[in-house]
Length: 137
Image 1 (cartoon, helix red, strand yellow):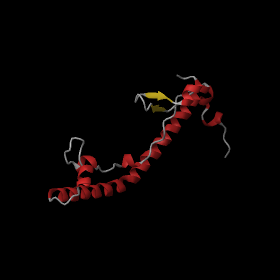
Image 2 (cartoon, rainbow, N blue to C red):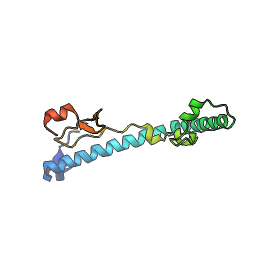
Image 3 (cartoon, rainbow, N blue to C red):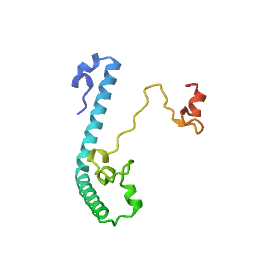
Image 4 (cartoon, one colour):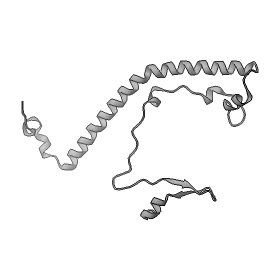
């Protein structure tokens, strides 16, 4: 069955190229979002199982700490910056959403993204050599 666009959706022929591109971009975004939602749903079981394991680890670490059996280095690793022992804040269960990688963000059209680095002497962020060569700075 060979059909042409003027028979299937003739209203598309009246749209501008920009409108058609926007429509194509919206459809691509919708497809990507549906795929991401399906991936998140597939990771729910793994995230649930990981949450159970994290709870068991936190309970075990607390038990060992309460009875003085946890080595000092491990105690420091599960402590906050102020020295408070808080393994539940340090080790957190992942969510299904966090297990699905997000697509990297693209730079706006016509722009190139440059990395910044810290100047070892001043500690301030400075543009990369590539950015300086390109005259962005």
